[in-house]
Image (cartoon, rainbow, N blue to C red; front, top):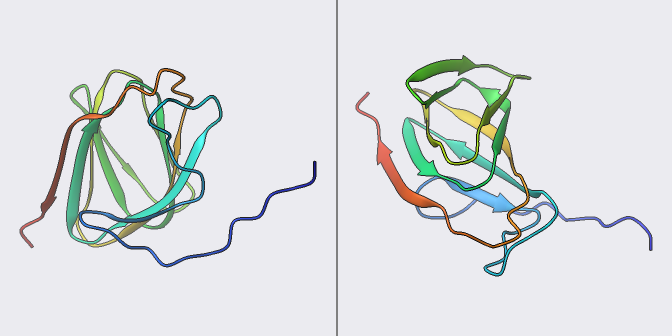
Length: 119
């Protein structure tokens, strides 16, 4: 079997704009799930049963998890561990590559919340 190519599509959606390369399946997945997403003066909070990684492609991303806040710029990678709630926000703009670790049971994210920031 040869390589697989995913064509570029526009970012879209309610809440954070995103596009999935590989999508999480309701029944679970055994390979990483990969997406591109952005925040523009916005915040996204959620809790996952799997590790979640955010690689910053553009802008500045802030992430809070377990009482610790980190700021990330272009080229930085942040991991929010499984079972933790991560709050991601971009005071101005951030575009990220997101990677979800395997989730064989397909357990859903919890406590998802999107909000516009006061600027």
